[in-house]
Image 1 (cartoon, helix red, strand yellow):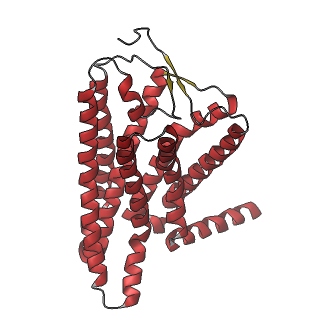
Image 2: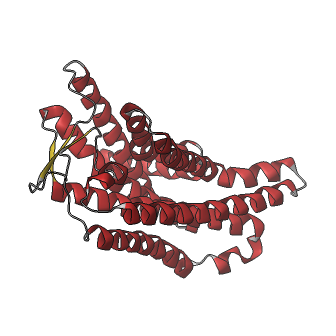
Length: 312
């Protein structure tokens, strides 16, 4: 039997106690956090302020950037604070909150990427009916269902977790509260909870993954049928950024599901978690800004307005 003492505080070991490494990690994650929040917030501001970006694709991009801001803000501030102060403790309640928010945001992100894929499919494969099929009401419904699904998954998981009591251990060799780290720490038979979460995640992710792959097969087929090379290049440029983002996302998701099955060292799982929870939110605004002429023009207009305002 495990220790039945009530545990109200956990210790996340993070990246060790090396005094020379801690300042470097602090600066690294602080720069990443500022860059990720600034980049995603810039996209949201540009989409809201520039009328030329009031299209379904940029509506989804702005919502995805909002999710990324919330995601990194759920994980990185606590990590940065622990690196600065050396305090690695977190209350059990705050650990649950961090875990539940990350669950909601990760599911919403997955479905937003799928909605963006559906938008590109309609734009390329059904251009004449695009405005009718992808109107403002449809966009609002797709975004709403992304959040509803994420919240519903959290509620289902929370109902099952309420049936168990946390028994320990008190220390975890990780830098944030991840379900894969906490699941073995509940009293009782947690196999049902493990299988439920695993199978539900696999089914939902495989479902949207197959939908995404099918859509892009249709998209690429339609692009290859365009007679002119200029037309093919222009059509592919409208979905290339999203294709790169989706590829990076699913590679990280598949890796996070497959690698833990072989019980890798803790540092390997930490690196995977950094890629999924930290670097992906940082790369999304970079990919959408650097590879998109519309965003370049909107940013140029915003800078010119800012310069004109300062001269006044």
